[in-house]
Image (cartoon, rainbow, N blue to C red):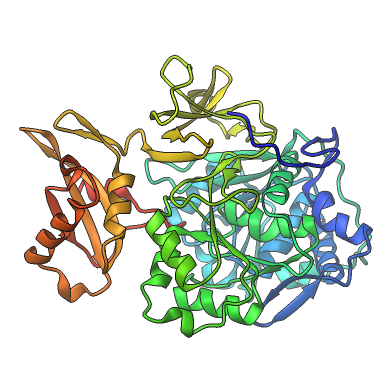
Length: 525
């Protein structure tokens, strides 16, 4: 599927042979004279590009003194904070490979990632350091701890103050060499280690820059933890590369904290997940409680936003939500953007340089409007190098010239893509194919429903009953009578055979750390 004609620039997505992510981001800003510009800010203050560079060079020098060097894998167990940024950039500057995992993972999960990734050192905060300290014998280059320490720790602040005077050189690395690793959440088995190359910053950075052109006064913020590649790119690395400001939301992403950060930090471009936008809209009169006038646009990824959520957000908050589609093996793939009108409910269209097709089992294009497998051409330089220590799994998703997303989708007459669901989320009822997303969108249009998840309920007669699990704005309304009224309201919106036979109410849908609904746990419930 060809991308619409959008004007690019000379050298767009052209990857040089030698490339380093720190050189392409922080070093680039220092070379261009942007040292006085604000790189990041949070509720405590701001740090300039020059100040950030001094801290990165200091830590890089300190880490080098511990014996950490090119190709070493170093575990980062940090929430969103300035220490994360300094650690990531310093490691990449040395040619070492940061290994990112969610900072809330338990001891056994941390141990697995340490062992699987071959990490020989770790960086963390004192308050969440115990799972890492327990692995000290397996970390020959030590445990580096910020904001407090115990005997035997390397103190982050001392290492960051190592005399470097901003002069330590960034290691020369090849564009195709490993730059960093992200680990999946492991909801269906052990987490997978996704290895990304330095080329990623150009290929994906250019796509991001083209999709939403950075403005001089932009302040970008993501609500998700930077251990997830979407937030890492949009909140940290892309702002650095574009010379704008990133806002740091430290701590959990409660709706009120997100909104307060937007207000106080002047966030202009927000990146989050559909769940957060729905939770914000569930707050009565929220549009009158916070000054959100700085926002020029928001972004949603991770799961379907739904047209109902978009329309309510635009009506009440007054700015668009550009939904986009991404995968950990690449990051942003395609999406809505200011280049074309928004079609609420669609995930947008491909941008130049990224080929996406809707194909059948024989790799042939399906007709417009027909559901097929959504595949991405695997020669894209934004793609990962593979799963660490798992060539079999890599070959399962990358073969025949395509990356197999596992998503079903269709394209409309204008080339906009619409996700029908995951291969393993869709199911049959009465031998008819059921797409949960369509029903969930219809449910969200009913007043008083905050969230909804549709899953199969095995049935001997019809194969599966359609089961809707719903979160109400007012839990006191949960009743059999209200369930019947919801089913009746649905009959006016979707075909009768798609109306759930089972309607249940729940206080909160189960979610992964990144905010995705854990459908499997509802299916098994």
